[in-house]
Length: 626
Image (cartoon, rainbow, N blue to C red; front, side, top):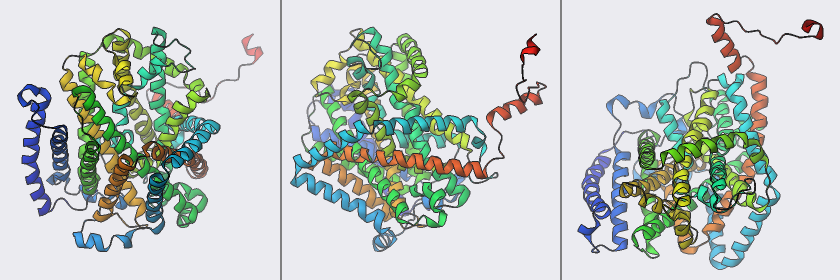
């Protein structure tokens, strides 16, 4: 969070942003809702620039607003981790002190690796792609048991924390108070951890499974029997299993940070084995280096792909082409937005844009539910939820060859690769919360929001495809199989389709910003020297660096390869999560044995109302029955 509320420079920038946002907004809204008034006077690149000006100026204005008087102490909340703040200084000070505040390994190694990767991609494009693909295939097929087992154990561990006695532990001590209100706490974590993938895949994943049903489902392609199975697998890939991967990394960090005084770093999960004083070892540094690489690789490739997908959707709907320059301009605009948001800190930009994101998310969902096939969505959604619950264990342990490797194992690896930055951010937000609340928020509440989205968008997509209201699969196939275009034929077939498309595109931008600004802040924390809060210079550097990596993906190529390399870091973090859970379990068993379980609390509450329950089950012997 920011240590300053807003300078005179920020005030000048805000004043300049207002007319830019208003003018560009008028042009965008006119061209979007009343295209006949605008005609073809503006080129594709022109429309993109105007649209980016509108989104950039609007979100930047929100991020740069000063804290209100009632929140004046927000940037200095006593419960907020010091390292989550941003140290502001003059541009000269930021440049001069930049390198001196960076950790040599966590700063230098990831930068060097990315430089070498793109050099290899430029010099040996086919060889680099072949090597990465071969390694990916081996890991995802031969080590599928590792990912499936790690995710399943993560879910079981979260369930145990919900009902067990350790759920009563309050992070930061019995008297610690939460740093943020609960709505803010949920919004910050949910929007940081999900990114724009939820927007694109919401209407797309179930339709892919409808076209080619998973082996576990065993239904005929494009049949009525495939509908529930398709929805079930979409829920499975985006539900509690996925979010549990974040929790099992974030909770150990939070516990050892707030209960044992360990630093706010991913390597803190090794505290039970190395000790708090031993977290400057090579093993700890290796974990932080992997976390930085995984975060930049995952988020940067997402930014690049989102740029391509966003423009693919525009081209599909309106036939506007942008050439090679379009995606680069889009990435540049996104980089500007999330860098400004990250630089203003959690209390200002990150928190506010997350709030905008959740409001847009809810508004869009309500509109789709209001104008879409409600009875079909509710009926098939209830059946899919039931199937998800009944088949959760067998789906979690199912090894179905190449299909499982390409879908389920790939998804689990992807979620684990994002777990370092999402888990660290969850830990940073969780001081003053009980372990049970952290699990309820980080797994249950986020999964509920995600599942509702996939049931709504996926159910609507399946209804229109199955009943002939829209040819979603035909549109996808006509555009090279890209999931980016799945939403547009759906919205075109619904009332208020133009409004839905506008909100859909806005959600894409805001969702990727809320993940990229958080990842920028987290990487700046990890790359800074221990016990040093990130500076403005560090935030800007890592924000721009992620943008440069995304542009390199677009210009040099190798996006699929880089994404695969980043996702493969999910393998080490799947192993690290198991190590972290083992260390946390031993520590909690040794030091946290005096907390009541959820069952004991229920028994006490019933006893207070005069309902007595036996503490133990009676021993019923054969003679007692006679």
